[in-house]
Length: 126
Image: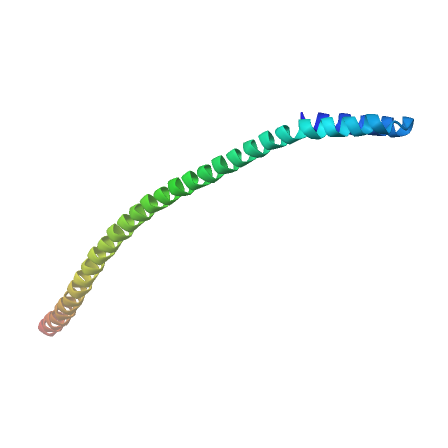
């Protein structure tokens, strides 16, 4: 709308200048200026209102993103806590098994020594 008025004013100005009609150019320029000012104010008001809407949308988007990020962080913390508990439990189990393995190894060594002694005794008897 504004661009059409500007184009029309420029076209008429060029035509009037070409025909050397200064009073017509002056009258058209003032008429177009009077028509452009309200249109400019209207466009400026629309622009400012849309800028405010965009700012509000950005703020809303940030708030949603932060809420989602906070929820995700809480979920991740819960998973990490659960994982830590599982690792501690596994570590305790490993320590028990290693302790039992040592006991088992000592017992196996005793059995092996005793079986050698039994074998030697049997060989001596034969």
